[in-house]
Image (cartoon, rainbow, N blue to C red; front, side, top):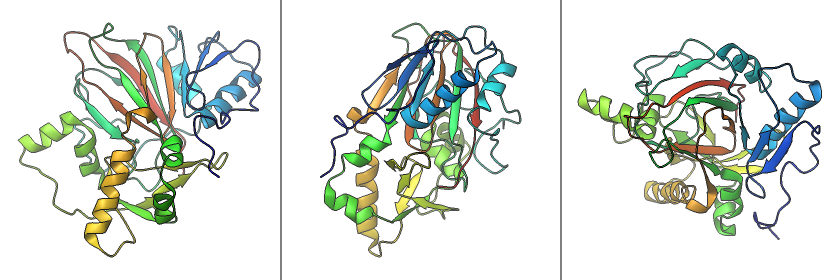
Length: 302
């Protein structure tokens, strides 16, 4: 019998943290908020261990009140979650490629102030990053947009009907090339490519194949690891059937009940696990500044 995602124990059950950390679950089995800690200062080994353990198990980690966190210190903190991650060079539709581990994300950056659609970062790469970290410096006021939402792909897998789960067991997926994955994920990149007369081909080749169901390397949780960057499910000879299944899975992970909406506050550091989480961002009124520092850590082959 499958345990309901609403009743299963939280994946961070058993993780111990020091009294200095105020840890509050956001949902019963997805996302935690942490207060009472200043990442600009030297942390104890127990505090660093707890943050990493929570990030590995909660999917989403929100560390509040980090108003003194410098870019350099953000880079040091990011290395608690893995080695610095920089994607290799390629035609990905991004005008200004980042070359630094920690980089600024201004409103006029690669994704602009426009909508970002559900994806996991660098999913078409052979080795995607494990974690993405965003540190909010300045955000639009409430009600002016710019919020980010995160999807629990372990819940999405758990809520699949049993026949679908059996059907996708062991199957792989073709990903769009990174260029066309970004086309589908970022409204600004899509608009700029189309204005230059570049449109995705009907059936672009996929540079890698990843599992449809990804097993988390820390505790074995299973995640339905599909997004707008998924081209099609592989291993099904009938093209129409493959397309139907692919579309069904991509619609499934977009169900609102899997998503958690984060309203940013200046000083928030948000760490999400690309191995089991999708994210999307709403656009915002460009009259209001939205400045972030960001980085990515780790990397593992699914």
